[in-house]
Length: 337
Ligand code: NAD
Ligand code: DAU
Image 1 (cartoon, rainbow, N blue to C red):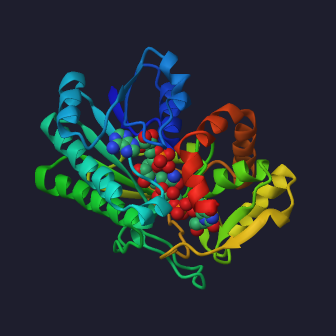
Image 2: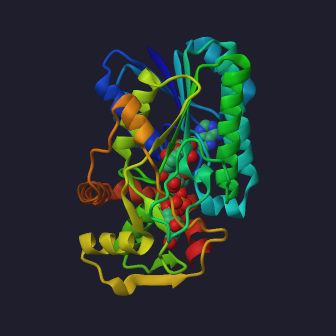
């Protein structure tokens, strides 16, 4: 089995590559990544030592390049993680999100059709369902809900989902889609809530909490997401969408206080700042379809996942320092002062 993993130098993609190399000793994995600010070849250092793994630098939006790669490699399965993934950046500059997330997905779908891949898997997000009200804890996202998006990021991911489903219906391409809730774990770029708070708290910098900190996210340890994708590409039904989430809802302020507790830092670091434009109130996944169909269940409790995550950041200060010295330094200064 030969798998193309796009975006594998990013957070979830690299965790998926390690998970698959470890589990399937006879699978070949090729990672295609453009190494944007969010991609880091250092995250793949151990994978690069494995003879079954190969890294290719390039963009999923470069149609000729993607075509040539598919022609050369004959992939059985494509798993598309590559994306611009940060909501705040999409509010600042929507166009790169359309180019990568929509046109890039289109290039991969077209090549998958042309070269007859046996499974194309689109890694999507719960954000395509918009948000849920804070005062209705009985409501959850289900796969049959309408796509009603809030940010340019979620709109671009919803567009990619629709295109993926269109390739199934029109051309019979064997596609699957997973829509996952918020991930946390090792190798996450420190622009996202949990690693941002860890990295800033370690430096005794203020922790910027948007609005009142009452927005709710459904947190899932990244390895549980990787396990779900593994099950879907092997046993999921073509044309189907699977929601992935841990029934682990937390307000942002709860999450930030958890980080402070683990690091023994004072709550006085918390600073309430201007709210995100169009800020989604609550995400909450109903994962009963994937549980019933494929036996998937989240395995990592939030406490142990947070412990593992924080220990990883404490043990990998070099990885963080390198990021802090790059494009991130300028972004961080512009956004957080
Ligand atoms: P990330 O930003 O950490 O990584 C994205 C990777 O894609 C980077 O390595 C980057 O270099 C690469 N990339 C960007 N543009 C590219 C291009 N044009 N061609 C090739 N590579 C390109 O993102 P992540 O958090 O790992 O998310 C991965 C996927 O999972 C995304 O599709 C995202 O929408 C989805 N997702 C993320 C979460 C989450 O909580 N992080 C939850 C659900 C779904
Ligand atoms: O739900 C899945 C999505 O989760 C993925 O599709 C996205 O790629 C991923 O980035 C994530 O989106 P969010 O917008 O939920 O994640 P983020 O870490 O940016 O923010 C989480 C919450 O924390 C959100 O309510 C905004 C808030 N926040 C975020 C940052 C960066 C703050 O209060 N302060 C901050 O500095």
